[in-house]
Image (cartoon, rainbow, N blue to C red; front, side, top):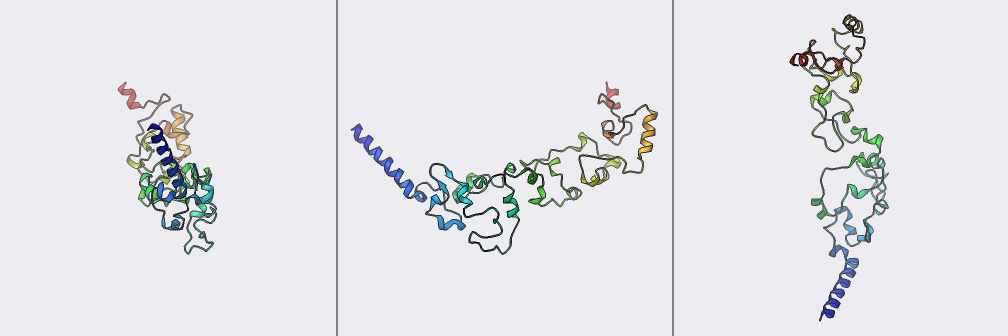
Length: 243
């Protein structure tokens, strides 16, 4: 009896295995194909390699990276070309399935709106606005580029930059970014954009106090309060009084 049961189970497994290869679209397909690939509905191995899943090498036999967004797979020009050619040409590797799935049933298992920027070449990753439109709010209107100084490539929010860690924007200092950061270079700043400051007056006042190193203003002045000055130990006058 046991031998008969084993034989039946083995026969069933053999039949199922054969059916998987003959009718994979019925046996293991997770869902219908997207409309553009409907003609491949019964030709799974046009995209899938046996036992190894989707092979990107098979995708690019029809979808040439240089033509994506510019030409159809038939060779006809797209009426309204878009920026995809630039994007796909700048990928480190043609890993199509990292972003795309052609089965409708798979979509609910995938994180939507997620893209791994590590797929892009380094030079392209640093040029965010090649793909993303800049925000139009007042704060971002003052900024051109330099996205990575506040945002990460993992997610847009929350931002990681806290200006108060460097300088408190209080009183008269709550002004436009370009007042201190010339040319949208937020890795550098100048305090000589206001009428109270000039290299000569700053030098004179600091020399009188016995201070010779005054190039990095915010190392000592962390706010617009001239009496709130940090010394070489990093403590402000206010903090010394508390001690």
